[in-house]
Image (tube, rainbow, N blue to C red):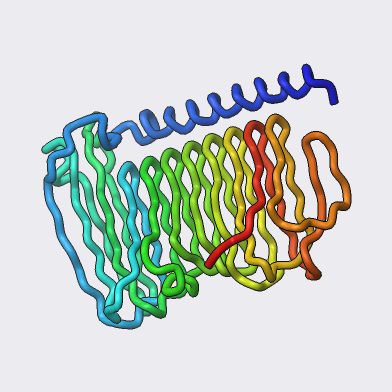
Length: 288
C-alpha cells in the first residue's frame, strides 16, 4: 500500500472520529439536553445520601447520565451505595436516584422526569463492594467509570463498563468488556475474555491470567498497549494503519508487513488482536 493511501485512510479515520464524537455530544446536549455536563455549570452540592445493604449482593447494575461512577472494593461484607446530586438548584427535586435490590442483584439508576429541559444537574455515584461480588455493569453517558482496589480482590468480578464521553479504568477484573466513544481505557484483567474498544482514545492494559482466552483491543484514534503474562499462549495479531508496531515478547513470526504483524507466543489456543487506525501498538510483558 502506498504512503499516500495510508495518509488518506488516516485522514478519513480522523473525520469519522470527529463525526462520531460530534454525534455523541449531540445526543447528550439534545436528546439528553435536559441534563448538564459536569464542569460546564455550577457544581454545587444539592443533596447526598448513602445506603448500606446486608451481605449477599453479588451482581451490580449502575447507570448515570452525566456524572462519574466509582466502584471500590473494601473488606466489609456489606455493599454500600453513596450518591451526590450536583448542579443547579432546579435539579434538586428533578433528579431521582432509583435504588433497588432483588435477591442478590442491586440496581442503581439516575432518572429524570419528562419536561426537565435546560435543567443542569448530574449524579456522582460511588459503590463499595465486598469480596464475593461476581458481576458489575456500569454505564455513564457522559462521565468516567472507575473500578478501584486491590487487583486480586477484584479478579473474580466479570465487568461490563461503558461510556459515551469519558475514560474507563479498572484495577482488576475477571472477564472484561469496556467501550467508550471518546475516552481512554485502562485495565488489568485475569479472565479468558477481554474486549476493549474506543473511537478516540488510547488503550493500555494487562491480561494477567494464564488461560489462553480471547483478547480484542481496538481504537480508531489512539495507541494500543497490552501486557501479557509470560505463560499466556496463542496467536497474536498487531495492526496499525498509521503507526509503529513493537513486541517485547519473543513472538514466533508467521507474517510481517509494514502495518501488520502476526505471530505466536508459546503453545496455546488463545487469540490476541490489537488494532488501531492512527497510533502505535505495543506488546509488553505483564507484571503481577
